Length: 487
Image (cartoon, rainbow, N blue to C red; front, side):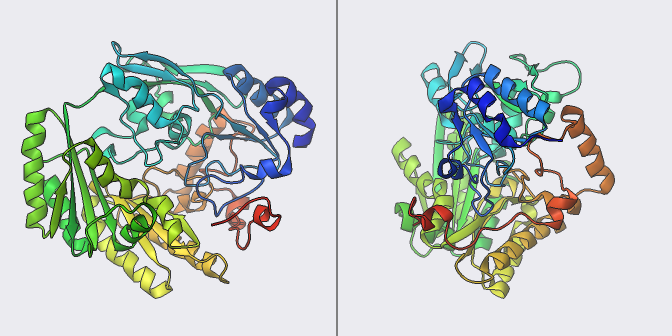
């Protein structure tokens, strides 16, 4: 019989110290969701460990008591992967944020899980290196969270996802054991447990130390922004660039509604009247970049771009990226609430899927803004709704789910880089057979026979899918109490 989580608090204080245990109701509510705020719940208790040994001791206590635990990094995830358990311990790694080693000779960095993604590149830059995975939230998202969700970013098209850049992990298993997977070497004999752990969404344990691959900083980077009169014209430019054998570091697209949001938030000054903007970035040896950049520019013009801007220096490149990098948060300027969805389709299916999304939007009356990694077909529809309007949240959730259905129908997946979490666990049976899911569950159980590591995430359960995770509507409890403001 599991113990009540409150029974663990004295021992948790011994392990993490008084300032490392959060029991105050209002402070616990600050951890009620990740970046997908429409799934929310108050954690039973929050702990803030500073060392691997503390994480291991907390997890061992949970295992002995039968109490579930949920790992959390910076809380920027977008699939409710860090949604707390009301009777569980939320283990937050934000205080484990030391860069332990930069090894330029070996092209590796060793960091704690709470280190912000961009800080790895900042530490490696003086040595002429950088860390390639770059989620849009890279200034604040943590490397540990990136490991859990196998995060991507704009440069995945050329450089791949987090899993392609991790060579070693120290983890705490759901029994509280400290285990090392891989190391600084490029490969290790035996089963690829490292590959299985990356993207396991906290269901196999908690990362406490990470060894990542560093890449030499490119000799040259060039960026262009092309404006089109239609999404189809922008899509045609993407196909032409890839078909021509040009491999950009990034190909990003935004539609008119997402441009409107970005302008309202950060005044990015994208070309007026654009129905779509395309950001194309190339990097590598200077001679190759210059030749391919000119080719990509011609292809954009041939596809109907009515304005093309090229960045002359790093400052202008940052201004081009400013609108794209802020797009998710910017939508809050034009809608009281929204769902950030994440699906992927074959790149050739993008025009058809985008047209179907527009039809869904028109039929439902729910606005959908599109921001996506066009080069690899990774869609991020932003489903906008008014959470104060009766039934609007349910309609938005339905539109969001039907967009994922479209992705599956066209040979894609329900997630490109944000993970499954609690948000999409009930849609896993749409992609996998009962035998597939049972095989995954057997693998998960080999790590976590007690089922205490981030329960109700990634894989569907009868309880979870019979009682869909709640969509919070109306005034937030902290706002109602006057303890917070909502904009």
